[in-house]
Length: 361
Length: 130
Image 1 (cartoon, rainbow over the protein chains, first blue to last red):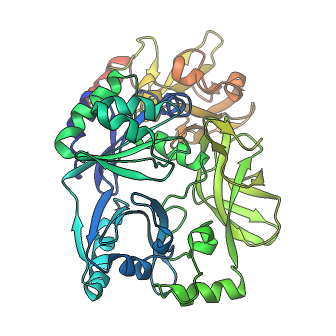
Image 2: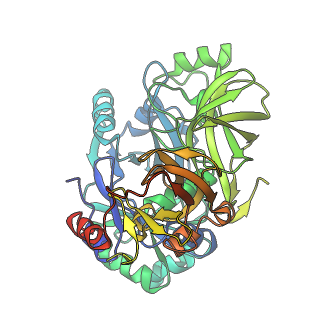
């Protein structure tokens, strides 16, 4: 038996199919994965993401610590509540995890890290935090709901006290705020507008049911995966891990090599890659033939072979899309080996879909 | 509880077999199987004339989440693959025992030894906890 979020019993009551995800028993779908996907693209859906690990960092040197710990630069964060996406690297530039960091005050930042990497992340963070006198506190007392879709924010504020609704609706993209005992952030993993809400575990069931009553559809991790891939967002463990660096994982944009004087873990390794040029790159693919791209399928490109890292059927585009890691080069078309047949795929620049709109043909 | 039509035969791997008047058989996956797989988005059916052995993979059905092989319940020669599934794989979800059929086969022999009756298949589903 895996670990359970505060919403586990409710998921069962709602008829979800539960699967193991990173050691947690999580809902993969309720009724139809495709309908859940469309609900988020067209209206609003809610996901239980309480398995993700919220970590609060406190201490006078927290900003300095994070500038050393992660590859993106929290020095960019000046507005309270502002979020930043980053990789946390090892010394060889391999990706230990990807995470979101929220700047709360100069002495307090909040991280959200992946469920499957929780233990190694906490160990790594604690090991390095000691040198900076930073306190590391896992917030297992919080549940996290992601409410996503074009109608998500308008519906979600229905759960807040009247005085907090305007403040929540006024949050710019990628900014969060503490409103009473809920932390509400305009972030997500679907390519749609919406909130991620961290709330006391004991509030989670009532919040979920209230969202359902407002017409927000219960969505499982299956729809979350098709939504994030359409949105061109990486999944840790599929698209990058400790054996790959950000430049071959489509994540070069998250690495802040400037300012040059900032020291961070993995910097030397990444500078060497940058100077030599990355031998491999992560690209987007659209399958032109019928079929479904899946992770680990072999990709035959002009410069050599590669592999699909994430692939699925895209409910919005009604065809198969994928990320693939291939030798770097100006490649427009590849072939993918699906059960011994070579099928044609075209390179596209992710995202595939954003804010309900197809961005590739 | 999934549907288990009484006039069909079944396999432990959740295929169904219908005896047709011309001596061929029609093969598909059961309502239980389509439900377990979820929304189907792709089906690959065999070409007419292909000779299949019993238990050989004869078709592939893919949901959003995963690809699954379908195993041929008996040896024989394919007389048709369902042409509608190329455009509408969701027919398997909507009508697993009807328009969602996968292939038709001329069996190599009259023996049907390994197949389950509807009652036996229903019992198998109960034992699997569904």
